[in-house]
Length: 607
Image (cartoon, rainbow, N blue to C red):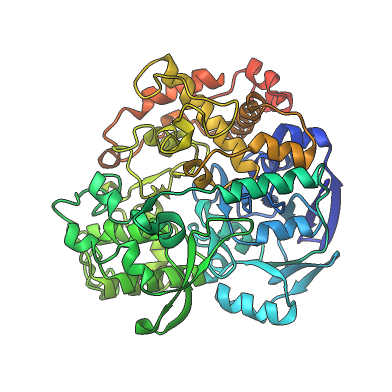
């Protein structure tokens, strides 16, 4: 769209800034473009909850076009949870509306004197009092604002964000959530309840006919995994894997200390499968521009829920496998509570698991946990504890910032807090995906499975001879320790950074060949190669890493809880650093690497 918007909540002003084309060519969009602006405009050692902290909302480079599976946007800023660079990705329809409002990013700084909303309605920008909706949950907020601004798209925080929970997120479309990194707390600290967008701008296309033909061919040929007549992704969504990943050893069981064979058996798993969830499905749900539609809207009269988003696998595992809870209705209820409260289900689940293990081992008694019987699988108590965490009531006030901070405040049970620099690990195991340990420990946003992990990404067309993207291929011997594996660790990580910043959904890696270069050509008119794409990704990853180094963080010193790893993730990271041109002793990008990637503006900060 050629410009971004700055909003200063302290003085109530808006400022448009033109974006040179060379910045798109260097960073694309999403958290790549966000990293450039936030790095250069954020003071060193900024308080993430202070007025100088910047919160950015950036759609992907292709978001808002018809390019399939590119409807995503990213929220970015310094994470108050980990103290590192933070970004969180989200689908739905809010990202394209940023483009329709005329911008490739919205950057927010300052702190309002009282609760506010930002509205951009057909080019008219306002900061409006929000006292009447402060305290509402995200669905109530969205419905209230839709009454005022019909046809708009809304991103808001719930009670968790208002109360500065460091595991809170930002919600759109009543159930899509930019959940990780605690950025809902940053929004809450600014007293910003919601952003309301309704735009009429169109994206200029270089070759509309070529784009239309490419979209038609991709959508007509879309192929996803099937079992019999059931299309796993489009019929069951991510919960298709609820039972399978437990049987393979990928899903963490009993706070990472148990096994499916002994603790959460087939009998338990059969109660929370994708097929069981499908019994409540009213209709499919898909993000903007998605031919697969892996989401669903449920109706669950047994717990008086008329409409709710189907819980994703991560949520099912966080409140199922991790807690030995096979009560499917409770998982649906918790998902709805977390969507309304605006809080990360992965971190809440991990924090509940920490609390249960402390309780089971006598470190916490009934009085400590407000009288709850916090035994493994006690779904009623789990639901009540989640409510307390969202509202910061009782023990929930201690738990609302995640398990690491809770263990520090309580002075007990640190060994049961399974996290990376304060962020609970996602529901995939480094014991199954070896390179995931490196991602959890050392990615600039630690603890996240969506970070370009080699061993996760190669599960689909990426490893086939004709590849996922024309012009990109994996070295032949990448599966075992070798120079080929070292190169693959770097190239897949860099590739993922770049494709994410186009707005491309990670699930595209598991479907069919994707004409990325052709889409970029038809939309932007660029003659770009996959080597160029990988270099862009390397630049983005290096700038995110540089942000952490500037903040005084030596990522190489981070250690994961041993029970969650069981593999040598440090060795992988040393070769990863070397292949990226970073010092393996401290993760600092070398001067020559920064110059090669046009990041000379970073050198003065790191050297």
